[in-house]
Image 1 (cartoon, rainbow, N blue to C red):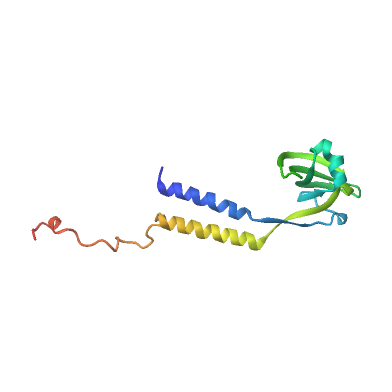
Image 2: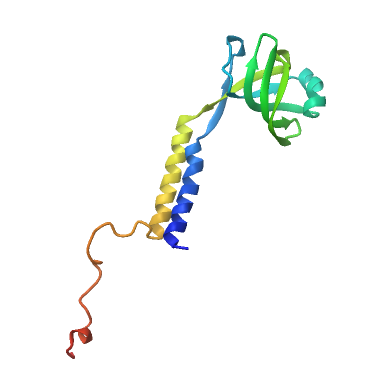
Length: 161
């Protein structure tokens, strides 16, 4: 495999995570209506842990997923991560879960943190440039011959010194 092609692939692998961004969760007022498709995190109350334990597992503390519907009494979301009080995290594949609003202590919406994203992207680009320069992946952008190249050796000119 060509070393330049290999390094370019690693540049793409290094930049993609930075482009995806850094997210934080901000409080969400579900009483005003929420658009379907919002990525949310729901902290479950103590009573919610007891009532949802049979469906979601014992000691559930937080649900993350996509909010699909809200009404005056219920929240419905497609769950992709469940965290328990003990710190264990289990991944789900988007199963729909419906529960009463009063079982949710807080509902937070995932938002892009622009300063952190710009910082991560800048650090990734700087690291990739340093990596590329260390392997001379940029090559010479100035045309012509290498400036360090001297005249040909005397023996190639056909005469002896």
